[in-house]
Length: 386
Image 1 (cartoon, rainbow, N blue to C red):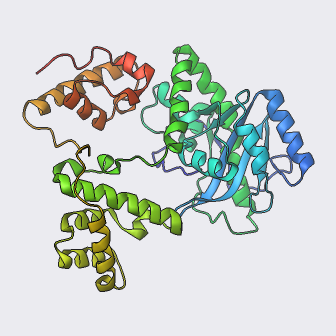
Image 2 (cartoon, rainbow, N blue to C red):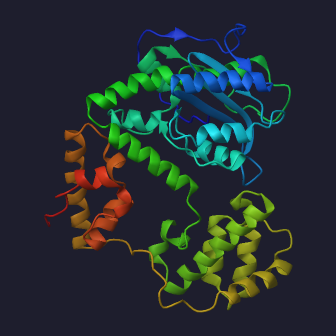
C-alpha cells in the first residue's frame, strides 16, 4: 500500500505495533495450496465481505509489477505470493462477484494492478479513504493516520519502500504487509457507521464505482486537455502536443518503461513548439530529454511530427486562462463552494476541483463527470455574477 501521508499523528492514546516485533503464528498465514484458498474464499463469502491490498514495484517499468497480495476476512489475514501462486483466476472471481463486498484503501493503483493481473473488473469495491472524506476528514488521508485516529493503533511505515519482488520476504515485510489489511475491516465498519449517520451510503457507492471507472478507463482521445498550461499554446502546438502524448503512451506500454523515460513532459512541449520547421530546436529538446544520439533521433522525430498533419476542424482546444470578469466569477464561485463545503462538513476540493470550477465559469454548466450527488449538491451554486 503506497501511503504518502506524512502528517503528524494527533495526540491521543495509541497502541504501538513495532515493525520488528516477531510475528505470532496466528497473525497471518500464507496461501500456498488449494485447500488454503478454499478456506479463505469460504470465510470471505460467509462473512459477505473481505479486505484487500497489494504491494508492488513501479520504478523502472510502465506497468506496476505485483509483488504481494494481502487479504483479510472474518478476523484472519492471508498473504498470497503472486510470484509462486498463480491464483489470478480465483482472485478475479472474488473481485468480480457483485454479492461480495470488498474494502480497499486509496485503491487507485491497486485497482489497476489487480485488474491487470486477474483480468477482472472489481464489483462492489469500497474505499476507506473515500469513506473518510465523506465523513469530513478533509483531504486524502493516509491509511496509517486513519487507523490511528479511528482505532487508536499506530502502524509502522518502515517497509514502505521495500523491494517487494525480492525473495524471500523478511518477517518485517510480512508484518507490515499483513497490518495493511489487518485493520481494514474494523476501520471500514467504523467509517461505514459514520457514513450511514450522515445518510451518505449512496454517495460512497457512487464515488467508489466512479473510481473504478476512472482507473480502468481507456486513454482519452484528447490527452492535452489535462496538461497544465496547454490552454496558453497555439492550436497547432496543442495538436502536436496531443499527438506526441499519444505516441509516448504507446511507446511506454510497448517497451514497458515509464513515460518520462520515453519523453519528459517538458520535452513534449518543446517538440510541439518546434514542429517540423526548426531542426535545431528538435535537437535541443532531445538533448534535454537525455537522448544519447539526438542528431540521429532528430530525423525520426521530425518525420513523426510531420505525420501529425494539420489541426483537424473538430480538434478541441484547451481553455485559455481566465481573464477579467471570468476571474471575478471564479473568485465568487470559490467562496460559494467553501460555504457549501463547510455546511456539509466536506473539503471543498472533494466536491469540485479548481479545474471543475474553471469549466463551470467557461461553459456556465457543471460537468456531468461530477456524478449525481455532487451535481445535486451544487445545484444553484454559481448562478450569481460578480
